[in-house]
Image (tube, rainbow, N blue to C red; front, side, top):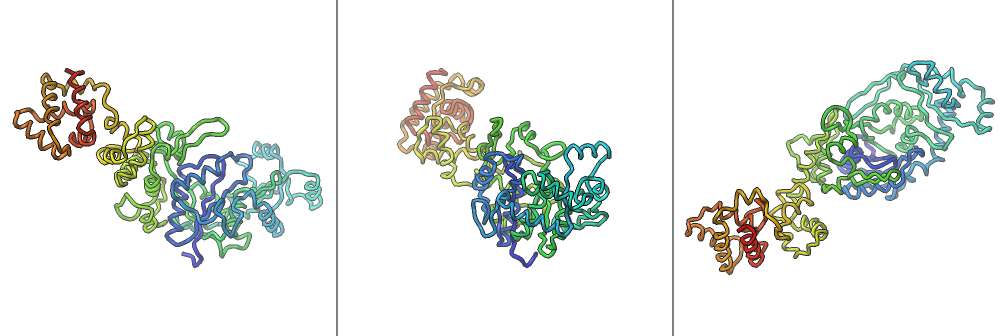
Length: 505
């Protein structure tokens, strides 16, 4: 660990909704920062003006608020290293572009898209690098006067980084160890475009990380090919001593088959790949989100944390504080992590069980309101206590427990055929009399009196209880029968029994 205070960042581009893989990257940065009492910075990398999507930045901010992943500084949070939105840092980048040009670490290139395409046609696997740059239109092949004239005339240009060939570039990665790539496979990447006077990701990323004193860059595996270039850029600026440590996280893979997790996988298998619901501003298409699908943010965080990292023990359910304490980049996998969305559902179930019944009841109230139900809160809490173990999502409570609030309007045919016997109507009438005689309608007292009555009459307990359940619920589901009748109360229980007797006969 460096002697410097830990500073990490999450830097999305506002080009669309935040992918669940990006959420995991942010989470790992957050856990790392908190574990080391460091700072977590939120930066917006909006240098690709062509791909900007309205509302994407706000979507990111709302997503992290829902997930309870908190930033210490950055866009909307403030801080001493701003501005944190790259489009507001143009003049800063221009200064560093000039530093590279002055030190002959970069050069100006005037090649048009058509000229570049012609080269690709002419040369198989064409790459703009040391072997081809001297055959192109750039400041290495043109005189200073020609370059100045072209710029003065308004000719568009780019600034390319000058990669020296045949040098082994070492990337020290906290997950993958020493990654070595020969510079000859790297092209002279574009660092700046005169068309919009904005840098590309590569330059802006390095300059911002340096100026914002980032100590660790924890990002997805897809950025690993960029790492050698970033190492070379740090060297070109003379910033080797403050180069951050790199950690490239494993990819999130499809739940089945091979390849990277995509939105299509979620659409096909019925799970979200975005934290919140997203409406495409251009097409109007709506993509599902974890929040709107009924997931609890704690469950999502716990689920994502274990996709590519293990705590070193068998513990699966972990609070944020426990994850912060246990998190270790050395325990991150090098290979991709299968996105087991069914495990995500399991986590949600576990967190619903852990939460106080009152908290789940509060979440259930809006669903009841939609159904036109205005029930006393203590009744909703009691219903949740008896049924939450049967659900994976709060919205499923209606299917599991709706009968507590609305009497059955019909009776399940299969259950009737199996559970309503020839003498059930007579027995249920007797049961109604027994229940009506009970003063203390608690579940325990009901059970004592009814079981005594069944024994005295020599009835079959299963037959009585199954018919009782059918009368009160309308089908063969639900918790313990006397818990149901206790919550319904004597009057409603007797009303439902009478109706079943009349309808089923």
